[in-house]
Amino acid sequence: MKKRFSKALLLTTALYLLAGCGAANDPVPFPEPVYWPPVTAYRPDPSPNSPSPQDPDPTQTNNHENVAQPTPTPMPSPTPRPPANNTSTFVPPITANPFPTTFLSPYNAYGQLSRERASWGFVRNTEHQPPPAPGGRWGFDIRPFNAVHIGDISGQYVYLTFDLGYEYRFTPVILDTLKDKGITAAFFITGSYLIHNPELVQRMVAEGHIVANHGRHHHSNYRLTEEQLIFEINEVCRLFTELTGKNMPRFYRPPYGEYSAFSLYITNQLGWKTVFWSIAFVDWITTAQPGQDYVINHFQQNIHNGAIPLLHTVSQSNAEALPYVIDWLHDSGFTFKSLYDLP
Image (cartoon, rainbow, N blue to C red; front, side, top):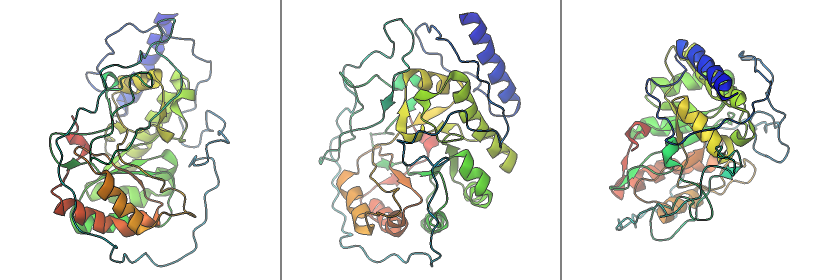
């Protein structure tokens, strides 16, 4: 049984490799033996118009693919106003080790990689320290699966990332700001976003940004079978290559931050680096925006060495605050880094 599923995975990977979307040349194997659980008979149709391989989860209120999105009222681009406090107050601390000494095992009682739901989260602190990875009784170590939540903590580095599931008129404003400030960022896009906003995706590529993978249908990875997860990842890659003629940068962010040891293993075997985050706040609710000052203050209070902020481009607050956040980070001694610079 194990041999049959291994052959199926190798065949699927080889087919996508021919399209520039398969596994990396030397994928890093997980060092312990893996006993494959049964795989369902579902085989997705690899076409852009194929149906979702899973019904939408009604409890997931920000499912970009399946929940009706708000229709924005036409209005001019927001004009940022000076923030209440744009004074540099950051003092670089001595950075503590953000990784616990003990972790849960990624395996279940049967020696298989666990498929149980894990949801990325962290506890903020007021000491400008990188938030620790979940460990001890709370989580397994994500690092052996080529997954990160922070970058290089040896210096004042920040890796700016955005998630995009649908367009809400503020992405061009954010791109204008980044161009004006000379900053490149990473944009994690869904297949739906790519299909409906090809001009913006092409602009991101042309202006030097990383366009990364956020899944075809924005499904929780831990719920998917092996074949479904392979489709969700590789289909976005195929659509990107079809649009741009380029291979997609091999960075992946699980929708909702939900994953399992099994899903991280498959993602790594396909050659993708999973990128979580270390700074985030509720910014994706278009009808309940936190405001420009909140965004600026959140960065001032939570910034740390090696930070990977997660922002959403549907946020008017982010669009208004971004110029001041960038200026404040520069004034505080931070250097903007690319995901290619991640450890």
